[in-house]
Amino acid sequence: MTAISTSTAAAGNSSALLVLLKARTFIALILVTAFFAAFAPNFLSAANLVIMSKHVALNAFLAIGMTFVIVSGGIDLSVGSIVGLCGMVAGYLVLNGIDVGLGWSIQFNTLEICLIVTAVGVFIGAINAFLITKLNVAPFIATLGTLYVARGTAMLSSDGRTFPNLNGNADYGSDSYRWIGAGDILGIPVSIWMLIVVGLVAAYIASRTPLGRFIYAVGGNERAAGLSGVKVNRVKYFVYMFSGLCGALVGIIISSQLVAAHPATGDTFELNAIAAAVLGGTSMAGGRGKIGGTIVGAFVIGVLSDGLVMMGVSSFWQTVIKGLVIIAAVVIDQAQQRVQARVALQAQAAIQ
Image (cartoon, rainbow, N blue to C red):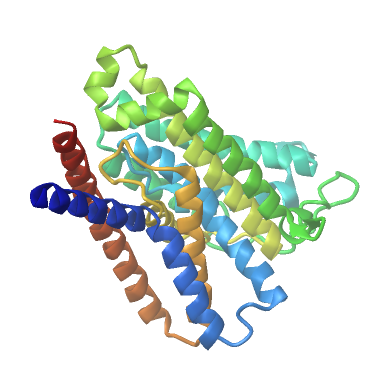
């Protein structure tokens, strides 16, 4: 009886610890918010919450796309450069349209500009997928190369200069472009509504569709997934193209918010996206992760970044702290896997 009681107590302790580990992102968000609410002036003011929500949305978009990529067993280092390039494409179209020669140019309205820019982001994602699936280039190397190509192209588009004053032209219907970044619906910024839509669509795909199951299967065991009939290459094309789409949306939002486009926009954004995904419980080994957890992870990163700025912490120390957060997230994730394995063994022993 004593042995049974001890075993039951150990199982109960392991289960309680597992619950805490699974809720770590929520706990981290609560603790970080409480800390900055106490020590950062006006941290919970309405104006700061609106600004912070816009910052969080930018990282969350990229993190959602990154989650699909990491869950499938890959990595996308190019999303930050996609943000910069797509912002420059948007800026060029708003200011100049497309010159067809003989003094003629094709001008676009806001919707057409957004469609063209998102198509550019999706196309770059497709290039990543082609390199990985058809040319067998490792995801890290393929997306690293695309990172440099996209960033260099963004620089070449303006010789490194900014496209300023993206106010658009009412005659062409592009004057509403700035509304994307500065406007609101029912008092909520447009970028947040966009995030809600993208988040819900991504969560539905991940949890309710065969495609979502295929993404997890490919990340869990690519060879087994292929042998079971999963179109592995098609899955990889989807996740990288979706990541490119998310990068394009962020490029649109930032250029609209700033009413300007700069080729260096999005520099190191991919690192924040990876951090948010990992912090939200996505395994770097693939096969495990949830969109909801990633969004909460993006909030943790966003609250941490804005709170440190409001407290006047040096940008150098901010980088150090973010690095420590990523390391801690991976260490805790490994601990969670060990506890899960222990709980499974204890449950199996109890049945026998």
